[in-house]
Length: 121
Image 1 (tube, rainbow, N blue to C red):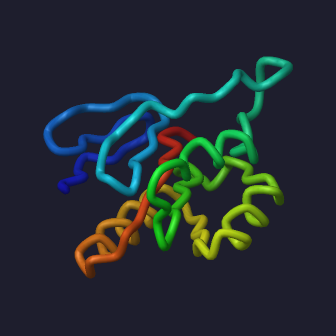
Image 2: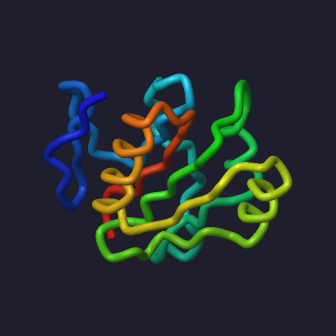
């Protein structure tokens, strides 16, 4: 997998440009993050328990990387940490630029890994 050109609000994965938050499942498929809009019109939609359960469907990864945005602003609910811990999945939360590097490094080592990348703040 090739992930290049990450910048505020965009990334290119295997030659395809993305401008919305995305999830890379453990099978390598890339899907748009299905999130509800945050209330009040401002802020970020936290990564929720329900959303995380959907991303962990099928064969679970050994690690799940969350790219929290350029400035690390994406909140991750405590329940997400409990879900991954209960399933024996290591949860790694980093700013998106670092999370992409971590994801690619783990993938190159043959790890079964999935990721969510928040592309803006």
